[in-house]
Amino acid sequence: MKSSAELRTIFLDYFRRQGHEIVPSSPLVPANDPTLLFTNAGMVQFKEVFLGREARTYDRAASSQRCVRAGGKHNDLENVGYTARHHTFFEMLGNFSFGDYFKREAIGYAWELLTEVLKLPPERLWVTVFKEDDEAANIWLRGIGVSPERFSRCGAEDNFWSMGETGPCGPCSEIFYDHGPEIAGGPPGSSEQEGDRYTEIWNLVFMQYDRDKEGRLSPLPRPSVDTGMGLERLAAVMQGVHNNYDIDLFRHLIAAITALPGVQNQEQTSLRVIADHIRSCAFLIVDGVQPANEGRGYVLRRIIRRAIRHGHVLGLRDPFFYHLAQPLVQEMGEAYPELVRLQSQVERVLKLEEERFNETLEQGLKILEQDIIHLSDGVIPGETIFRLYDTFGFPVDLTADIARERKLSLDMKGFEQAMARQRERARAASRFSEEYSAEELQINLETEFIGYEQLCAKGQVVALFC
Ligand code: ATP
Ligand code: MG
Ligand code: MG
Ligand code: MG
Image 1 (cartoon, rainbow, N blue to C red):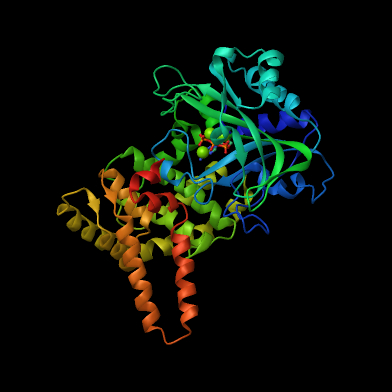
Image 2: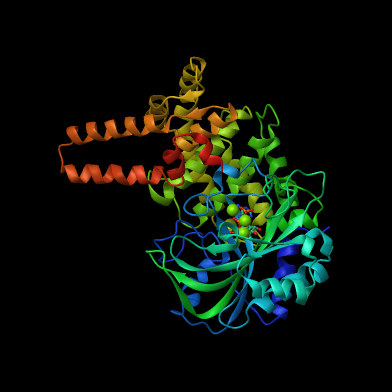
């Protein structure tokens, strides 16, 4: 059985043999790119190269990129613990062509690696292309000989990839693995796709355009290739398990959590959420993010607090999260020496944050329980959400996470109104420039709402979980 670490090496070695430069992972905080919260794909460090604004000494590259998807355009925070395939932190294996090869070679490499090097049975692999992309369809059906039964054309939602609201983008072709009939879920492109039976493992993006602020597409100087395959999803396939959280790395992390003193139960979702979150939190700290009340730091704080709350579900009452840095270093330290170097800093930051939140968590949970008992409509009132947020430091997504477990929804409109009233009060009370305090609060509000736009628009919590 191949370990995650071995699979990373197999991938990079394969592309080295195909003339690719192996480029180290860039940090999670993108350099000089305010359009992006965190590095969310392997192509991020090559954005300027795709746009033709930066030249490299190579025109094909491969990497294993650490990624975080917990805010902004790609946000999987709400999926963690609920799907078999999503993490906030994951590693994306990728190969890239900067105006060198295009669709034919990209598809050929992916197919060869999966079916010949890794020896996956072709009848387990399903393929999609963008519905207008006849060229890619021809390559798959005629060139590779994929069965039309396992091939479909999809719309822009799934098969037109963009890094963010602006920047490089293009049609893509995705490869899925069929985990078998014992797992729920319909084939790619079908209406009953819910479930993880057919898991997307690799996305081949044919970078052709640059999208500007107005949404207009202009052709890139040289059509390029950007691919991304989740290492953890590949590991699940190669290790014969149907859930990413059952791969070697996560089994070890989950074992470390269950071994913590004070653990009272084995609640699956909480174990998985914590195992996921220690990775994103540790790596964000390694890459220089500190818990804060706004921006990237607030996303980190939200993830830490979610992890602590899930620890509470397991019965843990004392700071525990920072103890997981050690098992994480054991799993990933070899591939990421910076994690080893900064382990004690990670522990310090997490412990401090845990101590702070522990002061209000218990009390806040009590308030919430009291308010929940009296609910007749299954909707947590905006005032409660606001009080938890304002007095007890519960980020809204944390309250939403609890609501989800209880099958309750949130009155987000009421929350917004309570928030607006608070802003009014702060403005009235401010002795300083009015503009200044309003502006400050605005920043907080915006950060708080990363990922909640849909939630607020629809006024119910369900939208969070799409
Ligand atoms: P999905 O549809 O499953 O959410 P995606 O289409 O959003 O995946 P891409 O943006 O195409 O994913 O990213 C390329 C690859 O990265 C995916 O094919 C998958 O293998 C992996 N990947 C994406 N998001 C995650 C995640 N949250 N956790 C683990 N792996 C991921
Ligand atoms: Mg996704
Ligand atoms: Mg997808
Ligand atoms: Mg995809």
